[in-house]
Structure formats: C-alpha cells, structure tokens
Length: 146
Image (cartoon, rainbow, N blue to C red; front, side):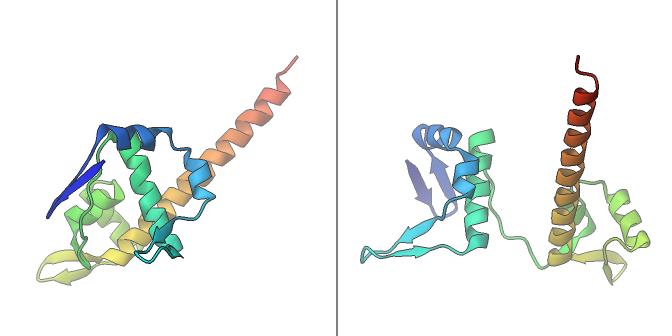
C-alpha cells in the first residue's frame, strides 16, 4: 500500500515484495493502462510506461526511489552527477565536442536535453559492448569445448 503526503509517497512492504516478484521482461512486453473513473481504460504513452517500469525496477532493487524535477539548465556539477562522471571528465568532453555547454558569467551550463541524450547514448553503448563481450565469450566457450 502506498500513502501520499504533499511531498512524499511511502511504499509499504507488500508493494515492495510485489515489485521484487514482478518479471521485468514480461512487464516490458505489456502495456500499462490507466483505468478512468467511468471504468474505461487508456493506454499510457510509451515514454511514461518506461518511466513507471524503471521506477518499479528501482523500487525492487533498492527499496527507494527519488523523483524530482530537473531544470532545463544544469550546472556542470549536476550534469556530471547525472552522467555518472567527474566534473573534470565532463569539461574534457566539452573541449572534445562530445557535449555542448554555454557560459553564464564564467560558469559552464548544460541543456538538460543534451545531458539526457548523452546519458542514453552511453547506456546504449555499454549494453552493446556487453552483448559483444557475451558473444565473444560464447565463441571462446565453443572453441575450447571437448
């Protein structure tokens, strides 16, 4: 059971148990629907479904989720944290043209959309590299079987 206050939603133990038991692959192959007061159902947009499923997975994994609004303009510290890199690495990427920034006074700022696009690109590259590594591992296993 979830209870809500103006700035906090508390998720009960039963909801966490259900989140842990939910098969994420099955959920990703399903459609989430919103049941309206009149009993009709409306399929949620794909992006919203993805956000809700990611939230459910995070709840299952850690038992907690933080949801906040990210501003359109990010400081270098917030952008680096979002990307999971150090601030010097982020500034190196600016110099290399990997991500764009602009100045507000003497401080670098980043567009939220640019940061989120780069974050997704990096996640996709990691998934692809992992899949390639798994394929190479499988090939090596076949080569060295009896």
